[in-house]
Image 1 (cartoon, rainbow, N blue to C red):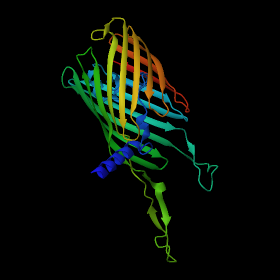
Image 2 (cartoon, one colour):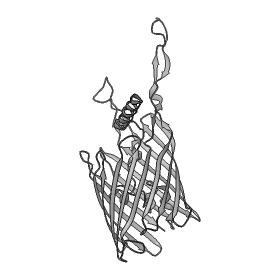
Image 3 (cartoon, rainbow, N blue to C red):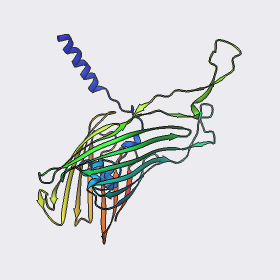
Image 4 (tube, rainbow, N blue to C red):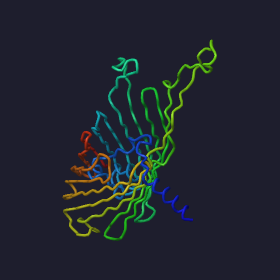
Length: 334
């Protein structure tokens, strides 16, 4: 029995020490959506109460009572551009959302072993996602949501694609309006590159002379998606109605998320948002145990024109040894 216990302890220790960073496909799925949430360190699983929240927890859009349209542009590092858009349509008891995101770069010159300085030919690179979301309240305090999304990566003549699901819920507790959010993201198939550049000419029987070359296809490995389970809590320390301290003019929201990914160590994200008269906003956030991202900050403004609502938000993220990133979001509710 002692030997069995020793073997089990060693097995568990190795399992916890093994790091799976770089073992998943479509890493662009980890790039966060929306300047408001990004400025709060990405801690948005329990909030998710605007159109960009569709990325963090599909259950969040259940509480939107207007048609919302939002767009986000991000100046990513290494001359990459990340653009997102989301459309939310309330339809009675169920709210629907249509959203997408794209990571792209300028043309890249093709190099080969024979021509390492370039071939005067260029290729492009683009990652894309298209999602459809449905969200509804099961009770006055519990909402659920589900997203079905199509994911594709393209590099020159090679592509890889698959489908995935996001499933989430938000519970609005009676304890001073605290909100608990849970979400499982990127539950789906594996991705494997295929394309014309993987077709080669080869001799199937090199040990015999005089054989003509035949067409063959190189085999590529398949990789899983970056699956993650997220758990979050959010509450208003200062604000109206159920806040810890009641104030009609000021609101101070605190949010904390924990993330358990399938390709790395657990992460903790914390964020805060201060709002003045529900018009001017200042935000900050911090990520714990993240490779590059740590501090983030941002601001926003919300203007009401009749029944319409216009929101403009900005977020800055310090990326360590990589270039810092800037996000700008524009949202319209009508």
